[in-house]
Image: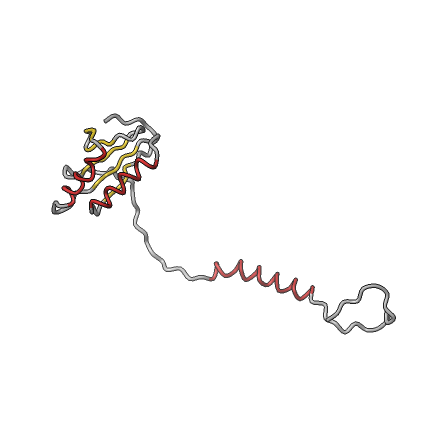
Amino acid sequence: MGMSVGKDEDDGAVMSEINTTPLVDVMLVLLIIFLITIPVVTAEVKLKLPVVTNEALITKPENITVAVDEKGYIYWNARRIAPESLLERMKQEALKVPQPEIHIRGDVQARYEFIGRVVATVQRAGILKVGFITDPELREVNF
C-alpha cells in the first residue's frame, strides 16, 4: 500500500485502497460500549455480610507492651530498658507456652528506624504474634 504525494497523472482514476479510518472509529466505539456494559453483566452472589464495630482491645495480663518514644528509648511494660536487653527478654517470652502477644506502641514523632529495630528484634526472638497499637484520635499518651 503506497501513498501518493504530489500531482499524479491519474487524478480522476478510481481509488482502489480501503479507507480504514471509519472502521477504526466503529471498533473504538464498540470497545467503549463493551467496557461499560461488562461490569453490569457480572453476576453477584447474594450474601449478608457481618457488621463489625470497632471494639476496644482488651489487654491480657500476659501480653507485653513495648513502647518507643520519639528519642528512640524502649519501654517494656512502661519500664525503660536498654536496647541491648530487648532481644534477651523477647527470647525468654518466646519460650513460654502459650506465647504472649507483643504490642508495639510508637510515638507519632518516632523515626521508623526505631520501630523497625523493635520489629526485627521480635522476629529474631521467634515471637509469632505481634501487633501495633494506634490511636484513632491524635493525643499524647503518658507512660
